[in-house]
Image 1: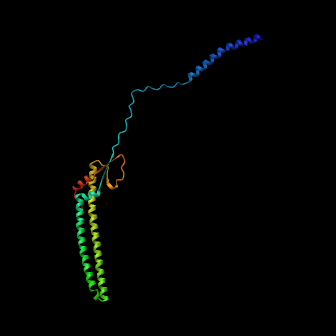
Image 2: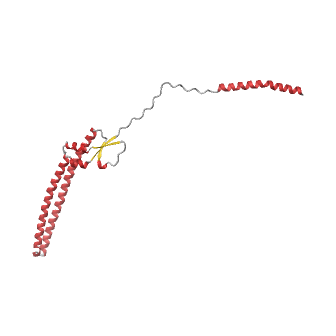
Image 3: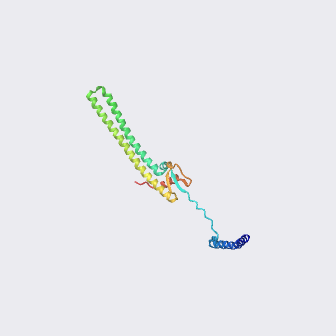
Length: 209
């Protein structure tokens, strides 16, 4: 019995090196099958640093006091002079008619006591007609003056608009706006007051019909 046990032990001891060798051979085969990671490619040359973006130019916006241009320019003063002259003439004509009506009224009142009811009614009707004529004359004068003012103002603003376009194009402005409409400007906008320049430019231009 002891002899059989000894033979088994010897067989096991002799089998250990064979098992160890087989395991080493299997591990070697597994390592051969594994793909090794590729080494990073060498970078040739130096990388240039990124250039900062170029700063954008500010937007140039002009603004003008149109009321001042109209009042102080030569064309504006001429328009105001024509309107005032026509207004004064019409006013004198109306004042003369008004005085005439007052005289007629006083004359009727002076004779009123001696007139019969029929005569009083006729005089009253006649005077009312005179008043209606005066009112129509006043309305016509007002319309005439308003029409002249619109005509001259339209021509003046046409000249101002042409002057603004010429100045803006010649001085690199993106736009020219009315001063009273300028409520807010952002940080990327460069405002310029061009009122004086427009007055000078308007003075060099002639009025158009």
